[in-house]
Image (cartoon, rainbow, N blue to C red; front, side):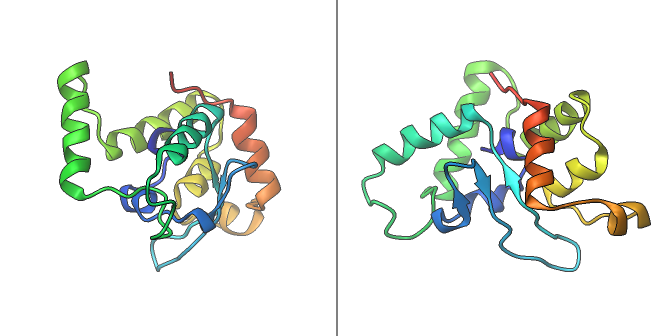
Length: 149
């Protein structure tokens, strides 16, 4: 989910099933602050397949409302294990950075990458003359055809 959405660490960990549209592979905006605005973001088919498999194994059946029930110690161990197995320093921050670079390489304009990652537009053009609607962001994301594995 980190690699295919470009979302921040806590945005993924605090994600609730009600914040998602599974058939559209979409995460709805949930909160804003002065510096962190969220727009719609999306995840690819690879992440959707993994998410569906994960949801089938959930024992608590969503009693907390959160999608990912994981303690911080266990979360850190997961990334340490991945680093030991691959030799790569894989963290949510690294995956967020990878998402931005990969989307840019796939031809997505910076202002849409910023929106998908929840960064507030800085330029007047991006603030007032860019279509950040659900339909447009979904079209931009789908056209990029992001692949992780």
